Image (cartoon, rainbow over all chains, first blue to last red; front, side):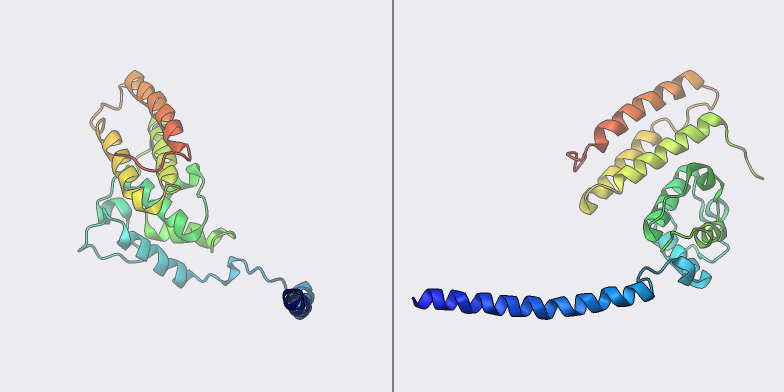
Length: 126
Length: 79
């Protein structure tokens, strides 16, 4: 008898909490109608992109530690990377910004500046 | 000095890219093993003359098949 009483009370509790949980959800969905929750990369500014690309380049294990990486570093000329290393680096940059660079475009990217340029022009980057 | 790549060279780069992308889908702890493996496999033929078309095409075919095998989700590590 006692246990059934207990069970009854927990059910009552649960329904109460469910009701209270429902209200904020409704509130959120109403506001989301007014302003979409998803923010696209219009907010990404060029300096941020550049800083993140430079971090990825610095973290790449074939980049020589002494090399100075700046916004206009050239992968092959300044870092001594070959074409295969460049491909690897670009995949790392893809991962960082959650995009996939098409093959044709990727073949043309050979410097930090070009990578930044591509990411800035890609609306899906984040 | 913009060196234009031949179609075949571009194919090789594309396959390298596919391999690296697949490696990034593997568990993070084993990723260096995959990347190291890819580098050594491509490195074996680094000095192949660029005019040796039939060998390069053969290696591309072999590589694609191997990439398919290692792409399976069951493959978690490589030695």
